[in-house]
Length: 369
Image (cartoon, rainbow, N blue to C red; front, side, top):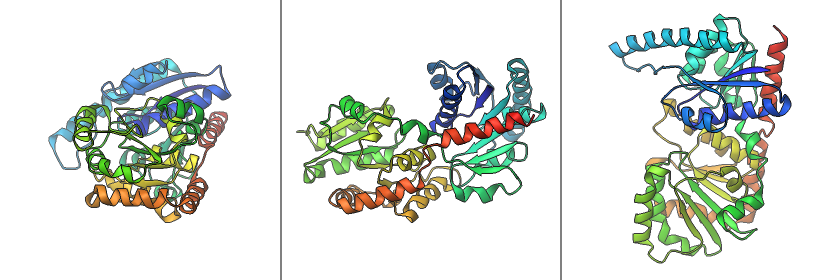
């Protein structure tokens, strides 16, 4: 299979695409993959580091307010379509997969106009504007949340697949997770993370909560700050907790997140689609703090799906403080019954074979040509 992957801007768009590519290569090792992204997005660094050929298309998003800049965006889109058609004609893919972000627009549109089968994947419970637009041209739409199916009523070929990041995480080695953090096997672990780039609100609450951790002496805490926040957050924690316990680790980034998730008894973090896919695939109880700074407040909708199922608790950022968060953590960590119930509920929502479901759909699309 010759496949083009496109998606970018954030890890939430990039990692699902890479998970699909990995599944394709496992099932059909003679396949060829090309990734088309933005030259300034995270994908321009992440994808080449994975050894996948990368090409770029210049594109920006539309402003929600009427402005002359939107005229320029239309011109960039049309230029991006021309560039995408050139790349697609050269690579000659059997199928094109888009996982979100502005760059998907010209690439998927160009593929559709060239008669190449296309699939778009919507990660969130509330569909993004780009995917809603592209669904008119795509051959198929895959969604991570069942609630999103109704948002693509004009697309007859819509299916629930879950998020392919789930497939990557279920293969993680727990022993490696303990070893990488130098934590004794079988220890209780609480992971706090604000996403791949970190989140100021979560880092601030880590500082507030640090002096309270002694109340849970048998629990190992792992704080992941994000690289840009690390020095400031770590310094502030040292100020409020000068005699830091070995049971608290403050890290800028986790390069082996699946292994660490595999040993986590509780995760505190944002409600991005990829994170939720990983939590449910592994059946990890969570306390979710949705980012209020995302389009259509989709993270709160993502979190609500887990809360309603009994798999997670949610704290809105405006209500967040150290005492409240520590109280919630303590309640869960002191109750094995609660942990078990939340874990079971999370697993019921998980789709560990998500990547395989999507690749199966791609095979169907390519055989219909």
